[in-house]
Image (cartoon, rainbow, N blue to C red):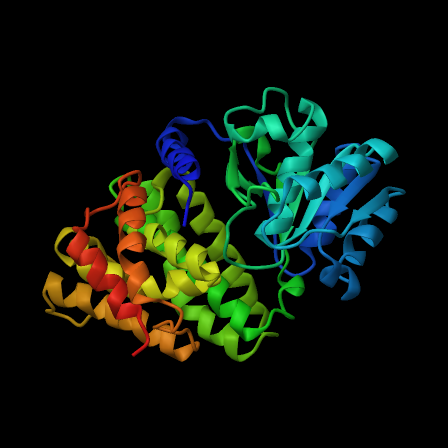
Length: 397
């Protein structure tokens, strides 16, 4: 379960991010956009780049896209491929040592949220004297080393967020580093790098992005800009996630999901998450269930409980994705959207219940989830009884 410290940090962040001025970011999109990003890095004058990624992407040859892209301009790439899930202080320090050893003047992150978060830590520590003192909110005093990102999953939105999660390997606590200075200067949404993603990862990361979009759309901080971004993301995910799961080489589907994740990530900077994340964090943390999988199962349960308060916005989403019928009431439209969500989950093979959930754990899970939810712009504050009902519905019978 989330620690009290991490929960408090997340809550403060969810409030202050509404008032932060985010840096401008350049986005390259489409097949082959990795080369466009490399061209951009060269134009900015960077000569020696640290590429932060994982060993799998190196073994697959994807990291060579950056090596070759920079070599074409006479640039040099140093590779750090030690990133693992849940990046740690040690990983950041390993990357930082390479920056100092080779005199790197920029950093490129290639991978999922873990690689991008590690790179944010390295870029910040390189100019601020160590990662340990940067954990927290607005602690990055000096501009980070120039940072660029190439996401290879379509879910976290880390490439546009102001936050990074760095774990302490000794205490196993996850610390949140949050500052506009750690947002990558430019990103490449390269569909060619996404074609090898397995259907299960495509599905779970897609549901993660969908949760960001839905929660920002229905949350109390939702506004026209947030709804424009999140609504576009929702439509893209409903249209293209099943296609990408069925055919991983469908370039249109891959590019659409990359854009959806990007739009949903942008909406998070103003909109914030809600009850779905509050409950999924507890379930995922307690039972080591992947974040996107936990998010997916929790989402329809939360929306069902929020029908009265979020019904109007859910009805809008039913119209947006084309599942509402002419003459339907607002209530019916909202229920049609939730039904469409369940159908999507079934179509892409997401589990709806978990055998890991133990009855004796439910009370603690609910209490922690409700504590976390208070810190978010949720449309509806659940009662303990409703939270207990939600968790029990996730138990495998």
